[in-house]
Length: 257
Image (tube, one colour):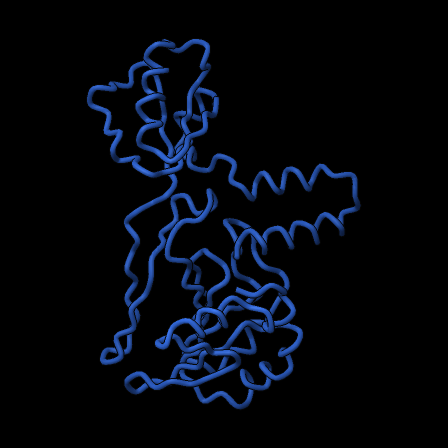
């Protein structure tokens, strides 16, 4: 939405608000009453508005629930990668609940809840629930509505795969990783036919050769994700450890937003 991370001045939302009469853009901070609870909606915190927003959070806000898009220490940015820089959890202690976007993974610590994004956007999201929440102001509770459509999937292909009964349609529009052991030892005619049929259904596919142990292992879904590849690449660079750590932090944040 914003061109620079350090200021909200240049953003795409201004254009959307000017084009639609039913769109209201919250540029700084506003409070709304839903049932008996007050929600405070806070715009992206950056260098320009940090001091003002810290005062809102700590002093002037009267909200029960605070909604923001923030980087909070201690939460997963992507699977297994925890934010070690950003806002302290302690500053949000006065709110009943804090609802944040930014990191895609749903995770909750104390009164702070990263609600996750509504759909899968990369391989790091594979196997993770996505969806949206509805707030019931009469019961004062949030209900999670799962997005049943998953963009990423894994197929284990072997010569014994029965193509006549294989449900190719279940992979319509998806991005697929096909796991095989030794492509050279497969029945090439059947294998080619399988790929040809699958290509008519899925958005794209990639073939990954794995060992027999990996095929059988329940951790098969943990094949290298995008962040794994990023980590592998940066780790082997000929730079000092502090540069690697800072590069990894930046890449994880960019990839997770």
